[in-house]
Image (cartoon, rainbow, N blue to C red; front, side, top):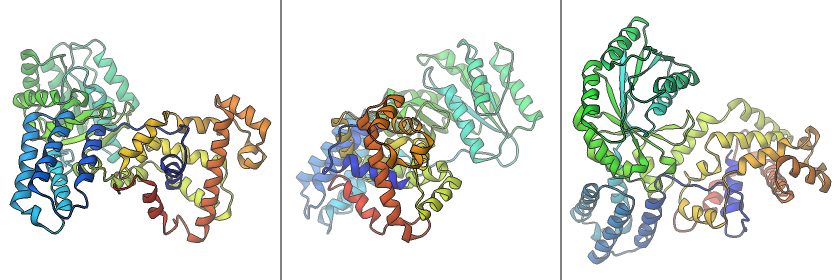
Length: 483
């Protein structure tokens, strides 16, 4: 896995190698803010002395960057005032390394504004845990209920019940029922009752009678906040008495998400939020506003449409990403969750014997796909905004891994075991069978050959070993002045 990541960086990001275009285009939640703040950080990095004029200019640039990222104005003011007060209060401008101190204070304030620490769900040890979901229609609330059920089930052996009190939206019940089957949890079927009070009371009785550990309670949303919706939500909240009241907010709404959060918080007191569609949001204003407005932590973020694409929210890791420092901790966590250990052990044996073939290469590509693809991995490495630019400039597609797997699948078993046998006529056949070009087949074979060479270098390192200078080489491929 790491070898393939290294090859991608070596081949596509290194300025020594031209890139005709075949890597995933990465667009992260804080793309705009990340690019602006990296530029600001570079402008102060390395300065032995920073004047008050430099400081004012830096803070002004940070203010503009935050506003352009659609962060709520009240949050921007608080952020700038806190950073400035800390810089002046700690006499940073007179310190030995003022540039590093300023960067550290900006990082600390980002972590503070995002929520300081990851806040897990409040699950009671004995009895029924009730989690109530609220939010506007179209925010992804119902899908998020199923995603959270999947996440909890993966982390524990809790018995989970899904309930929908959306009596307005057509097929709302059917949607959650279908999703419950996908994640293999039970759904409470109230036979299309039109009373939220009856749905609440009967679902609670059913959950307690059948010894469920957790009930996830979906509610109706509207296009806009109205009095009827809030009164109904307050009735459910009072009747349910939930341990968690989760606001599901669409990150694409930017600072509007903060206003929405404020209204829901005043009605039922939000204990946490889940941001959806962060994979489509290049600004990140919602994430930087919502916690400050409600005082409740962001607990999870939805990173895609698939059921498994829900991640715990870690403020310190996100702050590092915003400042271009990478997120190696999340990369390691993703690897441990998604990499098949049995396959890795088998691969290690093949490496030691020198029998690593294209079938093994395909397995590695599939595991990369599980981790979010090349873009998902690269997005967590330090200094990625410049790499992102290089990818965009080269018109990089979003189908690298799928294309390479298709090419391998178009080969015969003998060809996968013996790539040297793949000559001109075979390459034409393989390219036609996979819907690619002969050049793509050549690129794959070249990448595989590089993998084999790396495997040989690692043979003397022992099980799972990596060359001592691996990270140094990896850092060397990243854009300068960032890592």
